[in-house]
Every structure is written in structure tokens, then in C-alpha cells.
Amino acid sequence: FQNFLERAKVLALLDPLTQLPNRRYFIEQLQMKVESCRRSDQRFAVLFVDVDKFKSINDSYGHAIGDAALVSVARRLRSITRSQDFLGRYGGDEFAILIDLTSFPETDPAALQRTLQDYALRIVEPFEQAVELSGFLVELSISVGISLIDGRDPDVEGAMRRSDIAMYRAKQNSQSRIAIFDPVQDASHLDNYQLYVDLMQAMRDHHFEVLFQPIVDRNGRLHSLEALARWHHPRLGTVGPDVFIDLAQRYRQIDQLSDELIHLSLSNFCELRSVAPRLRLSLNLSPSKLSDPRLVDWLCEQLAAHAVPASLLTIELTERSVLMPNPVVSANLVRLRERGMAISLDDFGTGYSSLSLLGTLQPDEVKIDKSFVMAMQQDDYARQIVTLIADMAPRMNLRVVAEGVEQSAVLALLVDLGIPYFQGYLFARPLSAAALRQSALLASADAPSGPC
Ligand code: C2E
Ligand code: CA
Ligand code: CA
Image (cartoon, rainbow, N blue to C red; front, side, top):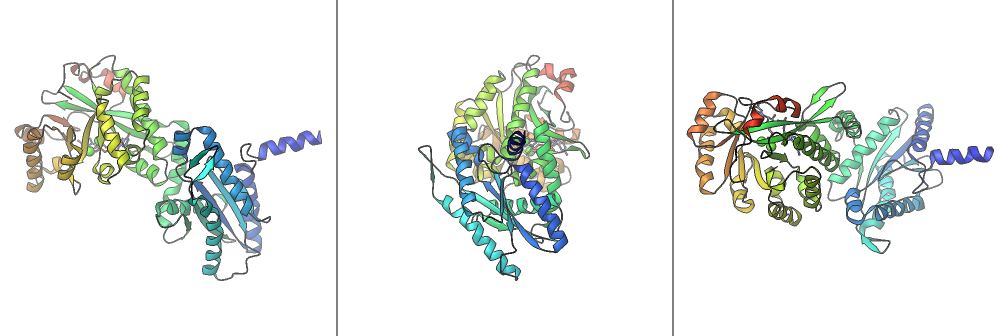
């Protein structure tokens, strides 16, 4: 019975892959450390270790190599952890170490930080060269965030949060893979952190919805639906994509989130196709998704699974995703086109290089940013920009969509300028698939649309 109990305890507290203490065990130890420091006014440090781009290692080499990568990181961490420190596997590709500082002679904070940085360097350095995993040479890099906790500092959650925020900063920094939490520099991140924790929960529980906003032609017929995501937060209500996509980007969760949103968009859209089989779908693609080498294959698999022809898809990109010269982005753009998808340049006119991008990217469509369209009546400069785009587009064989059309007077100006497609509250707000099915708009989509 005693043996059985011991074994049950091991199973409950150890991670089977790396044989390291699991998250639960680690948090238990952290809790004890926090309490003992509170009583004795001592300090300790938490090192948060994360494997960079672990998802793409898994995607490119398969799960067996992904597992081997985690085992090799665990082995390295174990080899440098002293007996008084405590190492655990905190999550998928995350590890954490509690560092006991009682034996560190440094009393001056700057000297202590340097010592901790040296400790972290010993973790990071071996991974600066590719490592061999089951016969493959794999580029594996590690980022480390460090926080110093003393008796006045917060609880377990606060300690992990600070280390995670520091780790996030380490990932952003091209010079160093190590960062120490700084209460001044990292203050704004502390505010956002709870929302980020909620976002992680929402991703696990699938608390997202996709709405569709119509893009219509001059006759008011439906041309395409743009998928726009919403997050239903249990306390805050509906949170808009500007907020949570930015958050997911900052905390490196954008790839998983994009996959979920694209999947959701396609499954809702495919229901609408039974009523309007010719209807197009416009998808916003985040910059990081566009630089994913697996994007095109993955997207085509998704399209096939939902029986949506690639030729019905328009990919909306912002200038930010295509500005940095990157061979993966260029190859993805070529391949998306080869598969029959159209490329649209979103928020057109707002970036520094909108015009030069027309040459390099050669999009099929531009969407005039709503800031110009909404200001057209009162702002002469905005009206000139819209006029310029409207004159230029037909010469370059570009389809133009004016977004943010709220007033009929603005619509009249746009029609005068020859603009063929519109989107905005004047026609419809973003609607759920169920609401669209009830509306007369959907039936109007079945008339053949333009060349793209
Ligand atoms: P966007 O692509 O420029 O989308 C247009 C935004 O303008 C939408 O806001 C839409 O609701 C809003 N809008 C449409 N018509 C009008 C109008 O007449 N007046 C005004 N004032 N606003 C109008 P939303 O849904 O909050 O989306 C914000 C941005 O978030 C989008 O800008 C897009 O860049 C991004 N986004 C939304 N859904 C997704 C998604 O699933 N994936 C990715 N990567 N980005 C998304
Ligand atoms: Ca868009
Ligand atoms: Ca836009």
C-alpha cells in the first residue's frame, strides 16, 4: 500500500516526458518559498525558460523530434540546477527554476542581477548552435525571463507573471535572450497580463465568434463577406479584435489564435454557401501567419475540409505584413495566387509605402482605409486621396473597395468617383452567420460577381 501511495504521488507530481516536477509540484514549491520569504524577509529568483518557436519545430519535424527537443532542454537545465534550486516543467515548452539566493554573497542588487544573468547564460549558450535530435540538426533557441522576489513581493501568480513578462521582453530583444523583470519598464505589461491569462482560457474554451460584414457592389448586391472576430469575455462582454489580436501578438499566441479564427471563419462560411454558392470570403491574415512556411498547405487543407474553393477567397493583408523583405512571405504570396486566391491590400493609404507596394505586391484589390472615407465630406485632403486612388485603380487593373461607408452622401461621392465596391454601417454591420441567413442580402450574392 505504501508503495502504491509513493507511485501515485510520483505520477501526480512528475511530468512523464522529462521526469521533471510538473506544474502542480512546481507551484506547490513556489508557494512554500513565497511564504518562507515573507516570514524571513529573504529573496529568491524565478527563472522562466521558454523554447523559441516550438510550434514550428513540432510542425516541421513532427512530434517525436519536438519531444526530443524538450528532453534535451530538460537535460541541460537539470545539469546546471544546484541541489538547493528547484526545476520543473511548467507547461508545453516552458520550464521554470526557483533559485535559492541564500548562498549568493552579493548584497548589491546590480551585482546579484549580473550573477543571475550569468546563470541564465549557461542555459542559453549551448543552444546557440544547432543540436542533433534523432539524426536531425535542429535550430533550438531558448529565452529566459528572470524575476527577483522578496518578502514584500506578491503571491505565486505575481511571481510567475513577472518572470513571464521578462521572458516576453527577452524574446522581443534581438541582442539578448535573457531579461530581468523591471518594475518601471514592464509596468504596462502587468496591467495587460490578466487579460492575457483570460485570453489563454478563451482559447482553451473556444470563446470566440466570427461575424461577417458584407462588401456590396453598386447595385447593393452582396459581393463578399469579410470575417471579423469577436471574443466573448465572461466579465468584460464583447472584446474587439484590435485588442485581443494585439495581445495575442505580444504574448506569442497569435499563431494558435489565427488557426482557430480561420477554422471558425471557414466552418461558419461553409454553412452560408448552401444559400449562396458563389459568395466570396475575405480573410484577414496576421503578419506572423503570412511568414509561416506551412501557411499555404495548411490553408488549402482547411479549405478542402470545408469544401470551399480557393478561388472564392480574398486574403486581406496590411502593409505591415508585407513590408519587411522576407523570402517566406514572398513565396507564400506567389503560392496563394497560384492556388487561385486573391490578394487585397487593407487599410490602403495609411502606410508610408502604399504606392510602392502596389508595384511590388501587385494586389488584386485595395481597400481604401475608413479614416479617409469617413472624413471625405469635411476634409479636402481625405477627398483628394480617395480621388487619386479611384483614378489610379482601373489603370492598374485593381478592384477598389471603400470601407467605413456610413452616410449616403459619402456613398454618392464614392459612386461619382467610379468606385465599384463598398463596405460600412450604411449597408450592414458585422453580422452572425445566423443573422445573415435570415437576411435578403445573401440571396443577392448568387448573381455572378466580378473577375476575381
Ligand atoms: P479591418 O480589417 O480594417 O476591419 C474593418 C473594421 O472596421 C472592423 O472593425 C469593422 O467592424 C469596422 N467597420 C466596418 N464598417 C464600419 C463603418 O462604417 N464605420 C466604422 N466606424 N467602422 C466600421 P473590427 O471588427 O473591430 O476589426 C478591427 C480589425 O481587427 C480589423 O480591421 C482587422 O485588421 C482585425 N481583425 C478582425 N478580425 C480578424 C481576424 O479574424 N484575424 C485577423 N488577423 N485580424 C482580424
Ligand atoms: Ca480587413
Ligand atoms: Ca481596413
